[in-house]
Image (tube, rainbow, N blue to C red; front, side, top):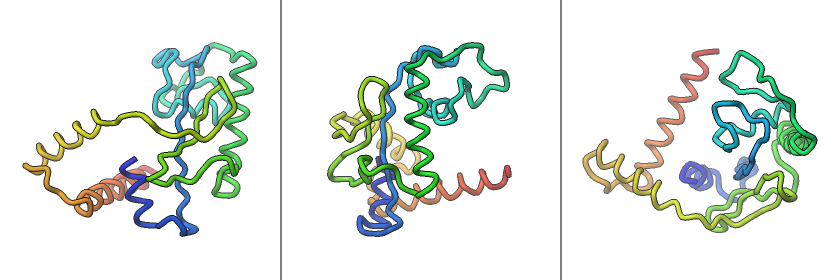
Length: 166
């Protein structure tokens, strides 16, 4: 959320460039890659987005077949991601990210995809971040602007590394 908040502050809510869309994927794949069997992790949506049982780190295809509910779930995700790729925006029921509403799009095979209100406590992540700032900088008195600058530098560095590999 911190990165989204910073981007929201930079581009503003009325800007055409404010194309921030937050989602939470809740899946329990029956035919998951071995490494993450039955657990939904970061990048877990990729097999569903591409409609294939695979692992982005794997060079070998996994030997399993999706059941019909997994295929339907994948097809629905494909339709959402195709809409984003074609127009830069998802379907209208997926709300724009706005920090003070804490609304996100809930993607699950158990019900229709729908907007939800984030009500989870991220205190443990706040504490980890605070400890990291203390260890890195010797104190935790950085302003939001300084933290945003550090995040921006890291993000630009990551983009630079990504382009170097291409």
